[in-house]
Amino acid sequence: MPDQDALKRAQEDAREGKSASTQAGEFVREEIHHIREGKHGARSPQQAIAIGLSEARRAGVKLSPPKGPAAVRKKAAQDAAAGRKARGHKTSAKRSRASEAALKRESRSVASHQALSRQAKKSADKRGKQSRRQAAMKAARTRKAA
Image 1 (cartoon, one colour):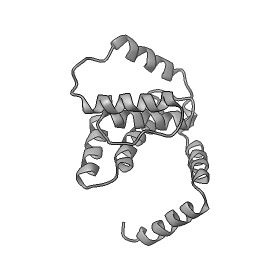
Image 2 (spheres, helix red, strand yellow):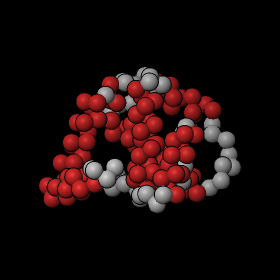
Image 3 (cartoon, one colour):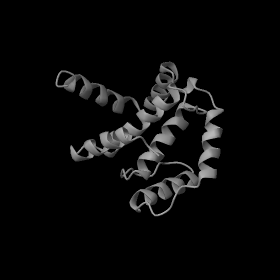
């Protein structure tokens, strides 16, 4: 279950008309903080991001399903459906405890600045040169505004 403050920040982003990925970013940020403070670990930065996105979908953020294997798309659809439904059932304590225990055994170094920087660069490389250039130009234009 996401922290209440992450939920509030995401709802505020939604009220301000910000994109779904910006709203979901709050949940990813929260997940990175959990790993850094030692609450649990993860196998990779990608897993930490995936957990955050899953929580976002379950909290009702309208994120599109990811590209990739059918199993991943199916899980994203389940998360989105859970986000649309009212909280009718209690989460299984046994399953929750098991997943938390599994994450506790994983490494904390996946949330280091180095690891996240490596992940961001790898992700940017996939987008292509023109896309990265446009993002950099926009960042330069809007830097002073913020």
